[in-house]
Length: 453
Image 1: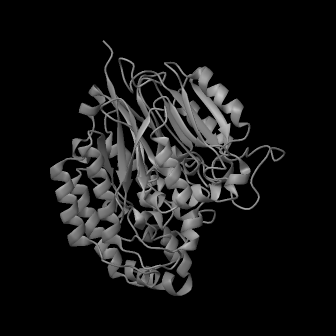
Image 2: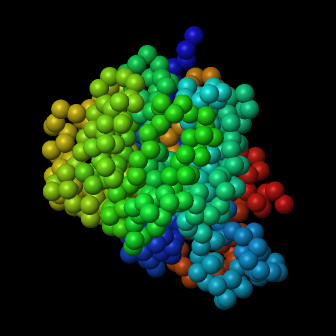
Image 3: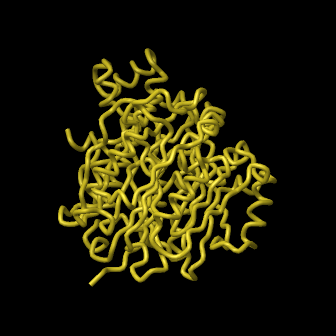
């Protein structure tokens, strides 16, 4: 008998070292807001508030733990020696930008944590997870070993879950995870999200063919070859996979991931007119491969919302979610209300004949200023009833967990943090103390480097 499945949003907890170091070339907000005073406690609470609100809306919601930062283990690989405190002090004096990179809280954006495929779609009937190597940015490329351990601690049952290592490092197989991947499925079918789905992989360039179109100003972080590799690892049927290339011109305008210019859910692709190369062909391939009722493309015209406004507002870095009444809602950042073209478009959209009937606004400004909106903050995971029972229950949002985590943040997080504060060795002690407590709250066991030595 087939089992009904559900889509969970696993949001990243903002880590204790949340700061604005401007590390992400190609991410307009990240570079524009470099050196601002960050508010780690406020950032974590904004993220938790969004998680709880979606949970209260009836959506399935979980939590993904942050990284151990500063990452002294990476700093040691780079030649810094002595005690942990001495390593940080030396790095601060000799290579402050390296220390900043090793202190980044960017793992909050769990759309980049991994790509997953539900058991309904894979040849072996298991749910598959591949951590993203994030090879294009040093500060993110050091995340995947811990990400892999955290995912295994959350989905720790070999009968139901398959965990792959990240793809080989280097530009050729740059993999940015679910930020460049969307799964479409007829959610109104009997199995809901458990029906066999259509996997949409979006890449920025061909790594092994320089004659193909590519951006010039900013890097294309996801490669075609990486997308192909993940599809193979997850044992997906080729009839249920569509590959599409991002428009290089919009990458050069700050669209560093596909989820900055399009978002999908169920049978709906909500996208900008300039999102893809050969855009009409992409629509045709999706419509032909989709197994279910009508496939909806909700296209936002460049005359209605210029690409620049889409990037500033993160209109497409909203979450698109299915509600209990069968309609869909856009979970949008507050910036969508402050940019006239975007607000006017959203007010118009909910009155149209599409499945999108609501827009819900959330304040995630601390994340937005660092270059990540609501969709960046979550990883979508589809699980059937048996798999839900087999996973770690302590990472699932509840009233009790929400209260526990808010109390934990109040106790362990600093109110403010500047780049100069990263040179303070006590920040490492504070961070490790907080994370040690978090692994107990979430029943993760030993997943952080300091817990494994």
